[in-house]
Image 1 (cartoon, rainbow, N blue to C red):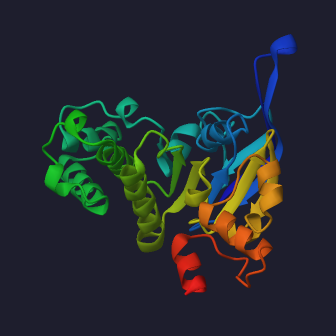
Image 2 (tube, helix red, strand yellow):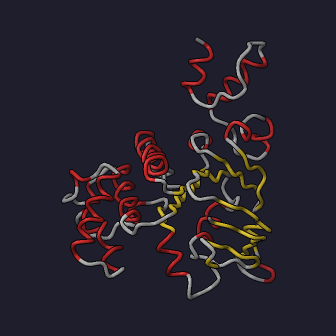
Image 3 (cartoon, helix red, strand yellow):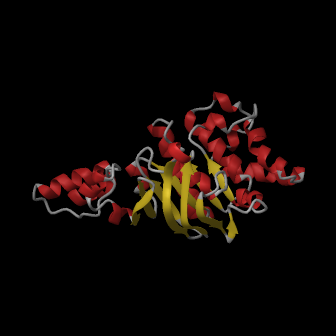
Length: 272
């Protein structure tokens, strides 16, 4: 599991100190799909970087399968366990062919050529990109580039995958592709997903939603529980899925409709 024990993180020092995270305690179990939701500046990306040791806590301790992220001898092992997919896929793609880019991680691990080939083929198949293995990544669409970035992380055989605002630079179709891919990685392959986002509709598709506000955990529960109180969500600056907002308006207008509606399909089914 991933476990944070009273973790705080500060940027700068003395007069310029910014408390990005304040006394966070959080446990993410193996196999979970957890969305970390919050407005800009809430501490989401800082949390993502603390998970795999890109940042070390100012106070407290982060553990990945029992290994501490503040233990320099354990950081390399932790980074092999925790894959990262960032906001801009262009910042993660370095090769001139898709398959070469996906092979970069396993090559640096010192894998044998046959194992590298197998890992690349498997990772590209998982994200639906095998037919573009010989393509130039920079000629692909935004969603396709992000899937190449995911394949590169998968080729490292991680136990956990952290998506840090991985859909924020994509169009609606690209966002759909990536969210569908992450859900399949979790349901079909058992990979633990930590999905950092500011989009309520994406968070609603997770099994659990953790809401950050002002560097602290403001809410933690199922999507239905977190988005049940529309006014509370608005006060935290996260909003709710549009289907939930419409259902809330219908409730207030006197229409008998379930308070658990989060998607358009749920809303259509209830109304019909």
